[in-house]
Length: 212
Image (cartoon, rainbow, N blue to C red; front, top):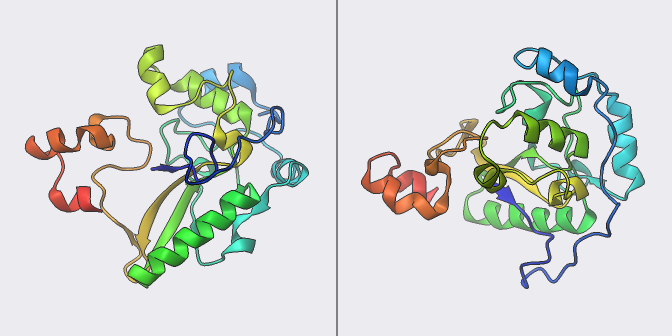
């Protein structure tokens, strides 16, 4: 689930897109050739200190300094993602634009009011443009379908500005994610809200999964 609380197309937030060029664009040192040769098991050689310095340079903030109760589980710092590659090494931090981070803090507070055992859990936040390119290159599907799931790196996405979050909800008492019908980075119809009724009728989603 991608939560974009800092965007231009939703009047509720009344926030502009960050200025052009103010995005994360540092390099993945392994390069495209290395990626293609070692796709199934490689680790990109990223200087994690460079990631953090780049985030700070463009004014992003560490989410845990805004709200330490929000769980962080950056999936691209492991192989538990659709690329199957650890792209961030040990960089398991969520950096965001300050306005985005503060709005997420309010969302966490609202969730806690409804159920104190629940917490937001962040799977991805600010994303280097080079990682966006790697994701784009690795997704083997036609351009129209690919664009439904991922932004073309030729046009930096909200993730590259620290203005989008991939997240879910976790029950901290049982340490389990709420069952929403699919895993993170699932690209089938079951993950698309527009097909919920169809998937429910077909028995591929349950009413409880849709409610979650």
